[in-house]
Image 1 (cartoon, rainbow, N blue to C red):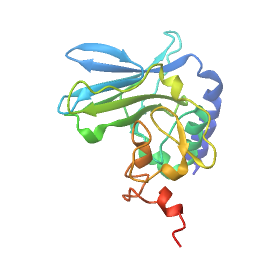
Image 2 (image 1 turned 120 degrees about the horizontal axis):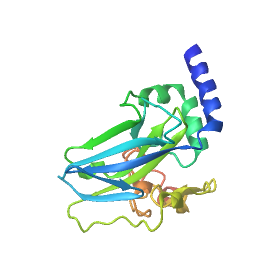
Image 3 (image 1 turned 120 degrees about the vertical axis):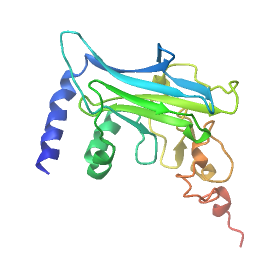
Length: 213
């Protein structure tokens, strides 16, 4: 308990001073290193390695050896810094995803990529309250494309209303009655995700709301 309190106090101290620190995601292929910002489309069966690196001013010497990669889920959905702060307060979830890494660098390997690897991934530095997100789209052929036009900042949107659902990929709000109705209304299908619907694609669908009597 004392460790958690000390860690939260430490987070509070760096909350003010981390404006000169950032995260960058780099794609590693055949000794080539390419920074990526928004999304990657790749064919199933290929190998993909992503590095997330902490960048800071050369004179600052910032260090973090617990940079973490996590796939988006109902428990881990980050859009703002406040979301990350709230995550640090969920003790069980927080400690389950906090992992050791190389200093200022965490590597995520997909060897090989599978169709089920499609989704949003977060690189997180809890120490500096930073996160970077990337959407990985895995298809059966290289023609698959993710409809991103701008940087990931376009995904940082206001919360949807209480009767609305926000698509994970593009932040679009749809009526809650269309969630888990067996039809993908979000471009990324997040409204019909297995985890969201508890395995039942028609749970909470619009048809459940119709009075047939």
